[in-house]
Length: 123
Image (cartoon, rainbow, N blue to C red; front, side, top):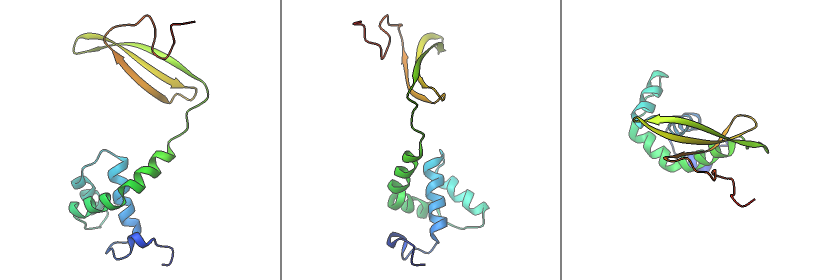
């Protein structure tokens, strides 16, 4: 038990349970009560208030780790233009997509610009 961080010392639940609850909350769009219910299905009785405290205490650490796991964008990318309708109005959706198909950025505009986003007009 020497490998357990001092931050987890004194908690009633093992590190695996705490980390799983915090991971569920930050990784998926779940409420604290939904995390409580998921853990109850696994046989772990924990209140949503406890999950909230864990998320406050350990959340930034897990959120930082999740951000670092995102794939790095490729070195080649292209600009994709799509016409969409939102509430009956035509809009222009611009997406920057890398070589692997990962969406890098999204922009929705009301009007189509002759000078496209990300492309300088001075040539």
